[in-house]
Length: 455
Image (tube, rainbow, N blue to C red):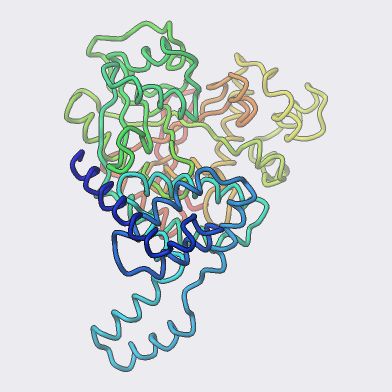
C-alpha cells in the first residue's frame, strides 16, 4: 500500500497548490469548517477536492468542542433537496427508465451523505469519520435533534464496514504488541488488569479472535475471548484469575465465549458480533474437533437498570418465585426486590440452594419477560437470542466482582448455540418473539429443553 499512499499524497499536494493559486486573494483556510465543506461540495476535480477534504479532517481533529458542535449543526441543515427528490420520485414512477432512476438515486444521496463520501480520504478518512461519529453520539445525549445527522453517517459507515470487508484473525501472544495493547484498552466486559493477565487469557486452553478492517489495520473492531472446558461452565472466576492452572489435556468438550467486546464507539449500532461468532465456531470446529458444545457465559448488564426503572413487576415475580422473595426481604430488612438486589446482593448466602433457585427465577423472568418494545430489555439477550442462541442456564453468584454485583446482582447466563437449532431459533425469535429456553432441574441435575417459549 506504500506506493498508493505516496501517489495519493502527491495528488493531494498538487491539489493544494492549485487550490491556493485559485484563491490567491484568500490563501488561508476558509473561516469555518462549514465554508470548507461548501467549497468541497462544489468541486468537480479530484485533486483539489482531495486536498480540501484532508484539510477539513485535520481542522476537525484540532477543533474545540464548540466548533465541533457548530459543525454538527451545519451538518443537520445540510439536507438533500426533498422537493427535487419528490419530483424525481414521480418521474421514476411515470417513466420507469434507468435515467430517471439514476437521477433519483443521485438526489437521494446528496447533502450530508455526499459530503461523508468526499471526506473518506484514502488512508485517514474512514478512521476520522468513525472518530467524528463518536463525538456526534456524545453530542446527541444533550441535543437529540442531531439524530438526523447520525442516520446518514451510520448508514454510510454500515456500507463501508459490511461483512465482505472484514478480516478475521486469531490473536495470540505472538501478535504484535500494539494490537495486544488494544485488547487491554478495549476489553469492555471483564477488565484486563495487566500483561500477565492478558497472557493467561491467551494460553493453550484459551483463544481470542477478532475482526479487523483494511481502513483500520492495527485496530480491532470486535473481539471474542474463548475458554475450553469440560462441560458448560457457570462461573467466570476461573477465566479471569491469572493463576488458574492451564488445562492442556484433551478433556475439553465445550467452548465458552466469556467476553465479547466492541472496540470502536463510533461504530455503535453496526453489528459485527453475529458474523464473528459464526466464524469463530467454524474455526474451532476445524482446529479442535473434540469440541461439541458452544456456549456463552454472559452478563445481564441491564438487570439493575431495569430494577431502578421499575421495569420488573415485583408482584408477578413474587407469584412465580413463591414465598422466597418475601422471606428474603424480611431477612435483610428491605421493602422491595429492587432494594434487595441493588443493596444486598453481596450479602446473599451463596451456599443456600433456595436462594440460588430464587435468583435463577429472577434472572429467567428478567430475560424472558421484561421487554423493550417487543424484544428483551437486556441488550446482550437481544443480541444472542436474535442470533439463534437459546437460554441454557441462569448462574447465581457467577460474577461476584463489584461490577458484576452492581450491574446484575452477580447473575450470569449461559446462552447456548446448538448448531442444528440456530437458524430455527433465529426465525422463531424474529417472526414470533419466541425464545428457546432450557430449564435446570436441581434435583435430577439435568437440563431440559423447552421448545420455543412464547414470552
